[in-house]
Image (cartoon, rainbow, N blue to C red):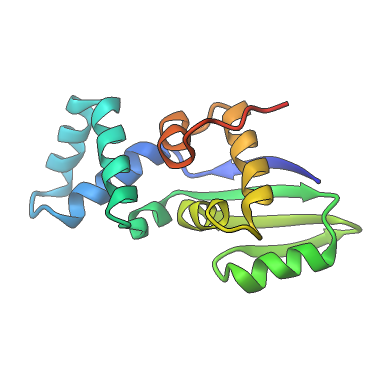
Length: 147
């Protein structure tokens, strides 16, 4: 099975950090965004770590992905969509699929025996394209390097 990133939310780590801060702040969104920018990537990492530790996974839903999955059997894709209801799959042709999911679902896949192999392919693709390296390091520990 081959996974290729088609699209992802722009600035996913910053977006998650803003969402995390907004959950616990009454500040105007512009002030939160300014604070996030001033504090930089280490602060984003802190907020991502806190979200995962506190199991505040809802803020991860603001980071979405669309993937081309080639060589996937219908039974495998069906199992993923049944077990992970926020993963959407559209059959293209043969064994090719367009799959959409958010980062919360990716974390849940990673933590599941039935989803970890697929999640590993997605994380490897994100790592290879240098998409969200802070998120990958915090959420998945040792990066799964693209081969």
